[in-house]
Image (cartoon, rainbow, N blue to C red; front, side):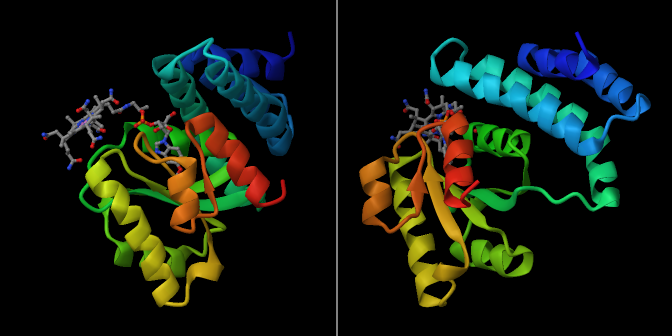
Length: 211
Ligand code: B1M
């Protein structure tokens, strides 16, 4: 198996030490940074996403793969920045005001990174004002809003309404998710998209940007 095939397989297996080893090997062999990303990390996380959607693996396995991917990406990130290689899009993501659940949101963030996006993670309990400030400051292509409680789900609508009132709604695509959120709710409140899980959030984000 080539170094990149090994990298991909170890991302899928969630073997962090091997991911680090093969990332370094790929760099030592002088393999192009974009090639390491496009033929190692991204296809690895693609397989993880597909397996999750097919119920072949579950959240813990996906988290382990995402963690291994993130560790390897830490080596690549400064080099990618130095080389001026652009991510496929920028996402600001956070859990809305009043809500402290972040496991699902973190998974979505990690899968988006694995899919080639730059992700700015705002954290949890984020107000509409803070989301607006982050969008003005970072100019992301996509804003991701997560809510896990039926009581905080309504806050997603408040954020979207605040963006409309401030005249910022057309500046960013808004995607939403979290256990109580549904496709119908997303449509009703004027979101650009909904995804039920982390793997489909990546497909949705790519689709919204025409990638
Ligand atoms: Co809480 N909690 N919790 N909790 N908690 C739930 C959500 C609950 C369903 C449990 C229950 O009663 N059966 C319930 C909500 C009921 C409701 O409103 N419908 C509940 C409650 C009531 C509460 C408290 C109010 C409890 C209390 O204090 N009385 C309290 C609220 C605190 C607050 O937020 N203000 C509370 C607290 C907590 C802990 C802090 C203890 C902890 C959170 C730790 C953390 O996140 N750091 C916690 C946990 C762990 C859970 C459960 C057990 C697990 C949630 C989770 O992480 N799931 C949960 C019950 C359950 O789900 N079995 C429960 C795994 C995760 C990978 O899935 O987050 O759904 P999920 O994310 C998925 C998708 O939803 C989607 O992709 C992810 C990955 O595939 N997704 C997106 C998520 N965000 C997305 C964004 C996207 C796209 C997709 O685009 C932007």
